[in-house]
Length: 351
Image 1: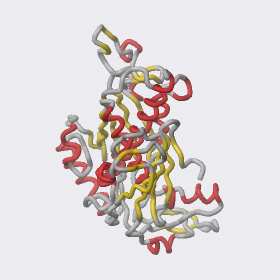
Image 2 (image 1 turned 120 degrees about the vertical axis):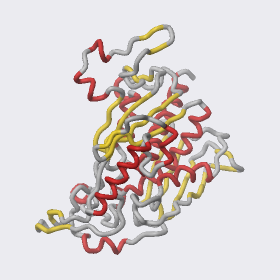
Image 3 (image 1 turned 60 degrees about the vertical axis):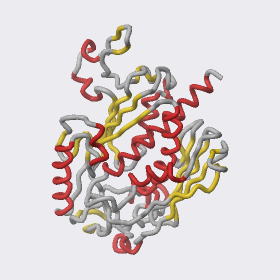
Image 4 (image 1 turned 30 degrees about the horizontal axis):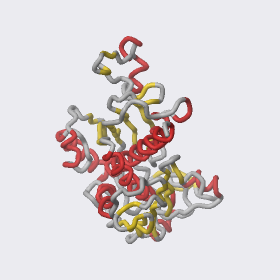
């Protein structure tokens, strides 16, 4: 399927549907000799899987990964690595009542217009379940980046109108919304549960920080590092915008305010977000991505069916009242894929 592959020298192809037999990924470009086991991948999939808390879908999927190829005696062989996760808790019958209805906020209408047919069971390839393959591949990329001294962390920066007043990365995995501020996390959870009780949903802003990337990664013009990161992150379902460093606030700054001065020790500020001219500066890479509210809500909504008849849509089934907490590992995974790809492209440049 066109559009299901990503990357150049470190390349991934995801496959599978939400209510099909399985989802997974094929990863090309894994460095030979890398120690790799299913447990390395499972730890990241466990952060993404459904059924984690009161603010995630109750769908119960263990998301147990199986390595089918590319690993021998615990090490990557350099050939394609194939990872598969079987779907165990499908309920496609939950979609029977709306199989002919274009759900507001979903890709039903656009998939129908593009292909002339669509998988109505949980959105098919447009489902968030497609991201299982991304996270699995990202786990491999993270292992390779760790050997390079690169670390990355994404977290909730803002949701339901509540901003994290402090950024404490130690707090991120201690609360169910993965916010970097304990008090903000408590208030955000309250808002999510209120929306859930009302049959509604909320969105949020995820911030990602990357440390240890040396200056020089990224290519001029079309393959800029920030451009590739933007494409990677905006390819995640429910994303609606991205900004680097000062981001959109730069539009209200002067050049003297936005420019990052330097001395012999390096950059003295980081309004650029660690990237200049599409090439990494060596400073921390910082970007934020906006996630829209979950499209599946139980409130009545006006729409049309595939025959053009006006109808009222009421969505039933098992859905997250917000997307961003489970999307945070996906943001990290896509970031890792881009960075490892650019490390390999930089090495090839000087080979």
